[in-house]
Image: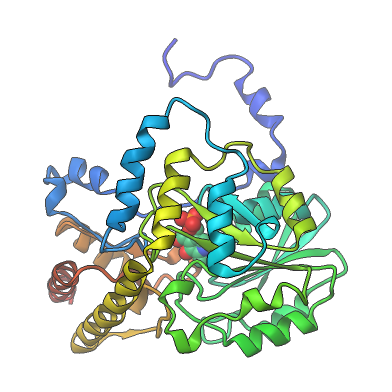
Length: 378
Ligand SMILES: Cc1ncc(COP(=O)(O)O)c(C=O)c1O
């Protein structure tokens, strides 16, 4: 029997999957370099991928060293409680370890929050153009999502507070948000926390926190004492440069953390990932270099967009979404030149493309390819 035929009973078995699972539209990741290389017959080294908001400086050499050392232990299960990493996070962020939950990427902690607090009959509130995982994680629990219209592409926190209903259990806020790069000032987020009902969990997703200028830094960890309904999620995937390892973490009230841990896979963060994350955390110079590089190259990219007569949404993260005529065709034309960016029509932004800030060379390649695409499609 080949894989294409439908064996007897397949349709029946699939129909046993809850309708809300069958209705999920899977997450669309950025196109992998290897896939484009296969499609175009190109060498992988010749392809520039600016589609997944990865760190163009790679990973901290100290994290790489820790990974090589951890390979020796690969036959053993990791520490399921992530003791060392939670202690290191506790020390760095001055938050007790009992308030820290580890995830297989911060995606995992977002899903844990959804699984621990949502169920059929409940609702979750999030903004239009917000990170795609919020509706996905909501739908996977059988809960219903309430999408609130955005204001200037950013979260309209007043409207989100008004959208909360009696059956709302979770509100997701991304700060900065992906794919818009928009940001809410700490005062506004604090006011939002004071406004929402105390029994509604605010999942504050700060995946791009390390890219914020220190003057704009989040104050969210200080609010944990005051608001037991606050979960702050962070990641090692962005400024820490460890996207492929999958390590994220969340801060929450110990009892909320306990509930999230109940739905967590026992060994969700590998021993290699835990060791690398401890070393990455200790290398704050690398994080600062990554931020400085991003600031400088963000200026190069936006100056290039301006030169090409394009507009963009001012971004507080390591990517920028720009408006371009015939966005889908421009995307294809960029692919043809070995440059991968991210179409965001799935985010309700069909006239925009999102580009990650890369190295100086990658950004030049992107801008030259974009100029060629615009000339071709004009
Ligand atoms: C806003 C936001 N949150 C969370 C994530 C998840 O990242 P990870 O699972 O790699 O930590 C991303 C990834 O792009 C993101 O953009």
